[in-house]
Length: 165
Ligand SMILES: [Zn+2]
Image (spheres, protein in one colour):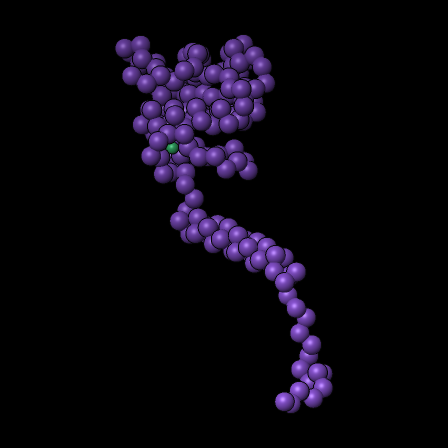
């Protein structure tokens, strides 16, 4: 059985959120409800890159209960959200794969996950650009290395009459 690795569940109200999510920090959360067997049913998993308390406040009304955990960094929160998303079979409230923190390049930590890879066309554009840049760098390096060996060739016609033997 996979685990969320979070504390709770708690009632999803402003008062309760503030009572338990006591610091401003990146973190993860799961929204859901407790069924009649006493199991927490996950409706959606999520994260905040800087303030999980603030993010939960925006979720009030979406579910009855929440679980949460703090994370040491936005990257840690992102990676945990990815694992939660895959471990719990893409909860119905998660329409898309968790997105990277803004400006970040790292990928989903779950092996074989292709969902967060760049669109193929965009990937090809990036490959092309990195090749082009590498090509330009090589051309510049070659030109720099070759410079000492280049002999100035005087323009044609300025050498006077050719020697005749
Ligand atoms: Zn993934």
